[in-house]
Image 1: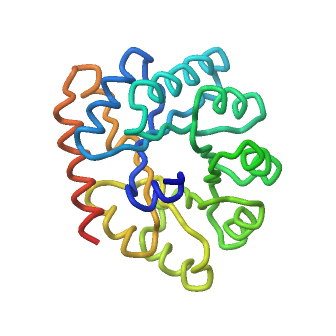
Image 2 (image 1 turned 90 degrees about the horizontal axis):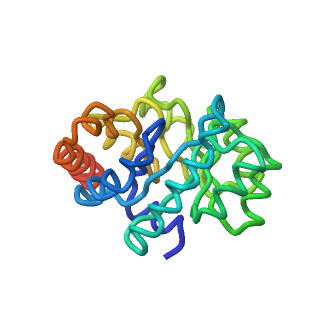
Amino acid sequence: MTTMEWVRAKKIIAIVRGLQPDYMLRLADALYAGGIDLMEVTFNQKQPETWKDTAGAIRAIAGHMEGRMLPGAGTVLNQRQLDMARDAGAAYIITPNTNPELIGKVKEYGLASFPGAFTPSEIEAAWEAGADAVKVFPAGNMGPAYIKAVKAPLSHIPLMAVGGVNEKNCAEFMAAGCCGIGVGGNLVNKTWIENGQWDRITALAAEFRKAVESV
């Protein structure tokens, strides 16, 4: 199964930001138990010293969940981060913006590219640059109606909704035409993680799974 086939089939990418490396594998297990098997670990642009931890987390997830979960790298903005992500075993590269040169490099590496865009012009530019799917960000600000409106003329471009997506509106985003969603703090609750409440993350992941499968 290709990465895009996996995304279309599984639909939900859990976005992990600013989490201590020690928690990553427990989180992966908890998400997987709830039916989520795509996990994006993001780079922190303000703290380059943490980039090695990001790459290490991707590598650890890829090894621990081999064949069961697809890890990817998020907030990839430069060549160094892209190289680190590829070497760590990331299957897909997600950015908050559309950078045609970086998209081209991602495709050269044989990885899936999910760049961020917002307007129809940006979405089309990302697609023309070689994106496999375009991340509409921040989607929550405009809601599912915006996705539906954009999909009318751009029905050929796979869209993913990220930003403001939760268990209550994710089905609406899917019904509006998204091929997938990305969910950060509305799923990966840091307080629950720090308190070891993995069962709550599993239960919420299952809610997301049930919601997207209802469409």
